[in-house]
Image 1 (cartoon, rainbow, N blue to C red):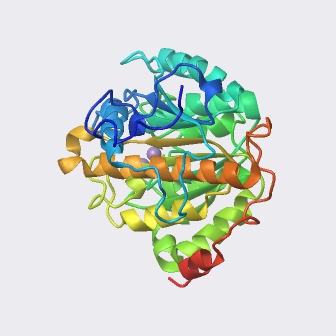
Image 2: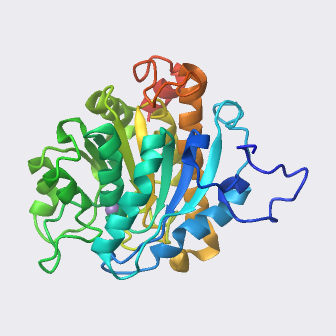
Length: 345
Ligand code: MN
Ligand code: MN
């Protein structure tokens, strides 16, 4: 099987089965370096619901993506095999049972050495994703983009919802908070703890206000120095982006970041040692003209391109090695003007 997208010269992009970028669908993660995995679960949502439909919506808009990366100027599938594994099993309405099934389905994927790009779902799915990732890799650094910290202690006395995955992750020892950072936090809250809580747990934070003030270049520097060479779980809640650019989400917060700032920030982090990416909280029903799903597809494209670049520059898996890049973050950054330009903001 060819682990690259269908050619638009052979079949037009609006045709065929709707996998991510029209990649082949397989159940064998070991055949690929990067795999797309849907996690269509939204029973952890507290306000609007509907993220269960996000994997399909993002796949549909991903037909607009093309294989040559416009910024890095390379064919993203040249040295990188990619496939769409479909969706993991969930039980709508049953959070604990869904957690068990999500975790079980993800375990062999992490063990295969492929880097998963997981598409939620509401943010509650990140907890079973982390449990599965840590079973293979050990405790991870968390790089978390979100307007909310998702470290609330409980909800109506219950432990699991989309506002608590990182509280549980810290309790379970899944995340090394001394290497972790939350970026983009903003919006009104219930009490001061909602702002101070993450720091009490040991996270570093960059609020939305601080990110606007310091600019992307400085934020990139802080994220890099916080994470270092650690293995990373990168979790991206689409509400990091301003609702003007990403209206299709469950708990939107104004004063966020635009699509371009988001791509620029993620590109600059391409060579972090990320072993798992997720993208959560896209709600297609609230998404006029599919713009949030389109942005989501492009965010996944940056993740995929980042892994591909790491493979191209360090033979991430081509030499039979595991998912550890053979160089420290930043060392193989060929485009230094990019970062210095970013820091001029
Ligand atoms: Mn979140
Ligand atoms: Mn959020």
